[in-house]
Length: 274
Length: 264
Image (cartoon, rainbow over all chains, first blue to last red):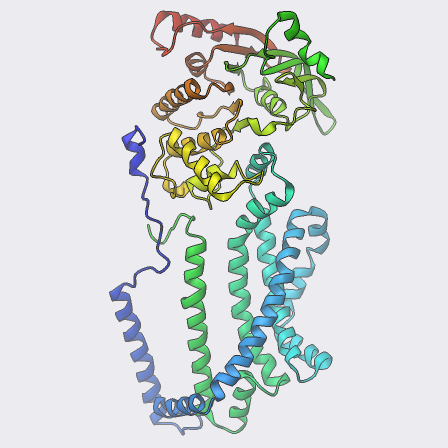
């Protein structure tokens, strides 16, 4: 064992678990918030026609309908699939592209203006282009998700490559480590947190813009259903679809992304825990 | 340069083994814009196997540059570097030469044991063999039980031990150290000195370390090479004779320190 007893004080060994314990007081606060929101919603719905603001009960019925007739799973599935494809392509292109731009100064300087320009183009404009180019098809939504997600991923990965520690490269050099191992063992782990936060952002944006794309350029999917319900003045169904989207996003974000990030980057000094 | 030049001197000394390191007439300068800075000028140094040699000198005397040249990551402008009788360019066993940096340089995303394993990952090696050797290295620096700790969970002294384990796991014949403990507090530094000497007793590797601390040099080294400031040359190589463990309050140690201070 280490001889110096003061050395032991700093060591808090058990690594963080995959899921952190839920704080009971926090759960209570969240419950109060949900109840309050539903209460206000219900009170407001009493004084307006149901096609302007349907009450919670009506929306619940609509929700049950789309769940039982399979509408929900079909459309949620197709939308999720489109987002996933657009996002995956964006990640597959954005990750290597971002690394190259960061590792090669010349390429970085040359392409520097492209990213901000891409970022300023509204997703609605991409959607219009997509309809011109791809018509009413899966490709339209996928393209819009891709064009929105890719610049975000590139920007983040690019930033990540700038943080690669030259000292670690030197360490690999004295160990006579081949270049490809330097890439996988030093560049990649350094970039990963940046890629991950970029990907999270891109996924969230992609999910939102996919709805825009589906309302104008698709004959299926949640976005299409939303517009259809609005056209038929089935406001209760609009609410039901919206609710499922919010729940879906919350599950993906809090149930998958956040725990995964906590686990992958457990080596980071946890500021929240202190 | 050829083999003959590298072994020349040793044959005249009739020594059975060549010196671990031999530097002959090393020059090195850096260009900064249109300004050329001579960092090393005509440096000659011979380090015998298993010796501990300290490089000491004022800042800017090119100590770290010299260490980089020995390690082969930097090429001299002129002169010869011989490692175990082989010219540096032909020497192919660089895995047996370890380098320990001024900072611990641990990869923050790796646990202690995985950081030690990093030194073995340049070559392919079975995973469990790598883990076994890394574990032994951690045992050697007395860090058992901390294999799975991340660097941020360790104290400065412990991180330094992990870095030492990483430079020992390859079973080096030569260990180069660039002010390795300079960032530690005095007490921890003393512990690391004991640690290093204990491991040297066991492993008998050749050690060359850079320091600006005269006391550190005298406590650790068999020989201390004193370097002059820019352009760096070796002013004198002083044999440190007092028996170990050395106590800096003892008169023979103090007088050696005074002598070194006068030389710098």
